[in-house]
Length: 174
Image 1 (cartoon, helix red, strand yellow):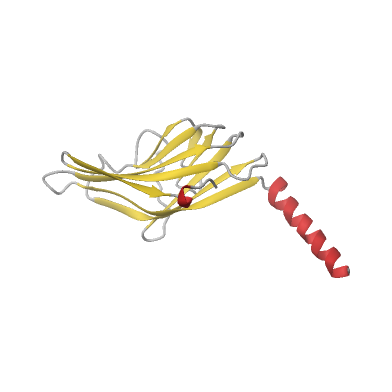
Image 2: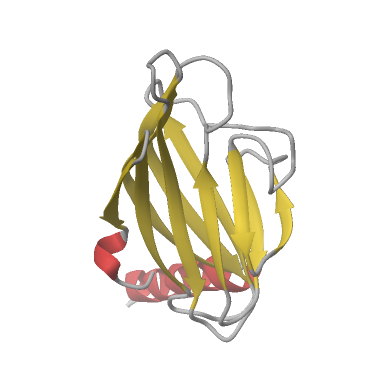
């Protein structure tokens, strides 16, 4: 009986600490992604990578995107501008930031969507970024799942274009 009481108390404390003290959290891995620009050919060869995220909850959430390059380092841009540089965002979001440990962070209102993009186009030299990633959302409200996401790779070589869809969390909310 004494062990059951201890287990019950520990379970209650862990439950309280993981939800009310730290907020509510969800996450998913981003399958292998790639973005590159090759300027040394007669035709510029470019691939951009986009992640489309929708907040399917009824609460505002913070989304942190971690993109790990092939060497394991976190891909960073640090110009802190959603319209320029390597990392970009568009859609319905507020509080865009590249100043955290993540690649970038945005706040997304309930029912809104955002596109987060790795876009090397227009940068000098030949660049090739690839690796995996992680998406983490947090909320102060009790939510079981808040995000549904998918990835897209856009490739361009001269006038030729191709797209490739990438499932995130098997297309399921997380």
